[in-house]
Image 1 (tube, rainbow, N blue to C red):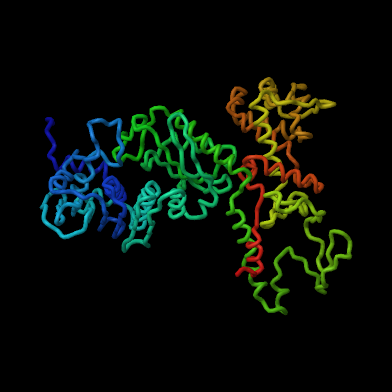
Image 2 (image 1 turned 30 degrees about the vertical axis):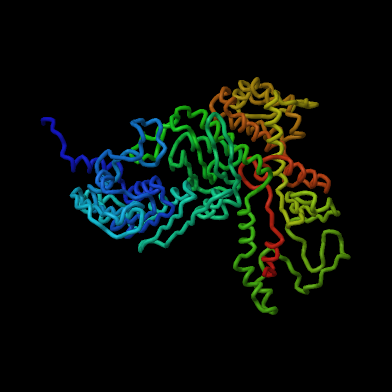
Length: 602
């Protein structure tokens, strides 16, 4: 077959296949044009998931007749001041969007500049142009796209249902609103419930916009980012490690005001949270990067959703550092959503029924675990310590404590009791705290371990008699091979026959660890990682395993001074609000939360 020149309408349709993937793609291109035109209020209206109608109304600069005619031509743009693609400072610049949209839908563009007496309207119906013609309107631009892909049924049938297409449009607008807090966005239509995000400005504008779009709960449970490093400015908010999601859909990335998907940024966030979250949980972040346009290529994808950094290592390092500093500044703070879960558990239906039942019927609705005696005797503190008349012995033990420090002195308050030999009950001037002693101490040991590793080999303490741990022969071989590397961690061990390891010294900061459990755990890790050489890359995983086996164990009774010492250490240690597995180390119930449980809130 001979080579031939493609007709213009077919060229536009091919371009549309790259730019116009679905109605959400159209919304993205048109709203970006509105933002570039200086709009301060943008209204997006859709019908049938955008397949029947997309209308964008803005109050931007508008276009005169010449600009209006050029706007629908291919490769015509006002967004490049010179023919340079390494200094792009606008959202749209390729000059293909309007021509592509007009080739696969009915496109109407009405626009008026501030100087014009009236507006003009131009119609492009699947490639056929009409106008411009006069039209009365305010300053700005109104673009309507109707019946997308109606004359390209092969493309139309690949669109998803109304709900899915509407949701995709919402996601696009949400990201554009997050990137432009100074712009008022309105999203409405017959296929959706409306969204209205008023413009915000001044100090705290970004947090206010994130609260509008992502919810006030995120802002409450996130730490602000603000750092410049290697020519990269990092801003935004990073969710606390205990505030996570089951997928990565709540991670948002913006580079120079553009919402992007980028492996470098995703990997940097994953690395920054590696110490603090479960492997199957995802942190919530809104990450904003400002970088010299010459250092980033945004022209690698037709829809400009992907990019390429000139120095990805510098970007990765800046993001990891910024998140690390933010989480360190947050200190021991834990997510308030954990307390909400606790309140929800207390407000279970069976408890609500018991609370609402008549006095005579209450016994039939007693929640399990609450052991009222049938005689319902009044409380009497003259009985044996730890027992209250009117209650049977509970499944766990509660030890009352003497009065500790003044409540206002410390954020985590003073220890009041230990329950089930693992949970410390503390009281602050704001409320009540439940602390998981093992999880909290595990984090403290882990952070001390990292600090010692940063300054050199970890100090060790000799065992009076070497501890012999029996293991399968292949595990012993792996440990023997890794022994020189493990000495950096303060663990000294030797082969002791074909199926045993002798542990001579252990890290001093672990105290009296579960040595056998630690050695078996390390053997499992070596089997998973493949070789002793992998230990260098698995340093944090090794430290985590050691910290777990060197922590205050569940089931150990603590004195009141030990409990308060643990609370003070938590206040002084960054990231102590979550253990090394990502679980919260404490739950705080405000006084108002407790009053709400008893129906005393107003």
